[in-house]
Length: 243
Image (cartoon, rainbow, N blue to C red):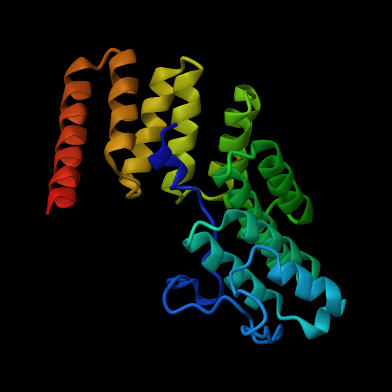
């Protein structure tokens, strides 16, 4: 998979599922960090403040901590994000919030190429509930992390499970197609990639994989057409970068 595909990892966007990075505040109000004494984006501030106070669950808003972690993700502070997501999971009594925190922690680890840690986080999320609204994201990301760690067969199994959980997820269908193609199952891969693009998961990388699958399935004319579409998208991207 490419670096661009890594950017497509699914993670939540906190309360309301709006833009998590617009006008954010790195310090949830419950922590009351004195910014004259500490750097508000110091990698250990949140951890130290929480550990020092040994606060109980009802004193910390775990969803606020989720938002803080997402803010860290938005500025590429992935190590701080993992710490914050873990504390969000620890300080909540709600299964969905805990599961969301573990999924996001896995994504943060994956961004640092810590794939074994990512696998552990996704598995923990699925241990909480393997059929919830966050389960498909956990399965999708777990499939990628397994593939990165060399476990292709397991990756396909989890990609299949992600599709079962959310048939409307273009990312899940793309992953399924990618892993099927890696296994040499080109015709099944074409079907999965068709579904991905039909659901709106369409960019140059996806179309390139689709063209490769079509070529291996013997659909040469269609493969050429899709490859041209991928090139057009890339050219437009380059033009935007030059503006």
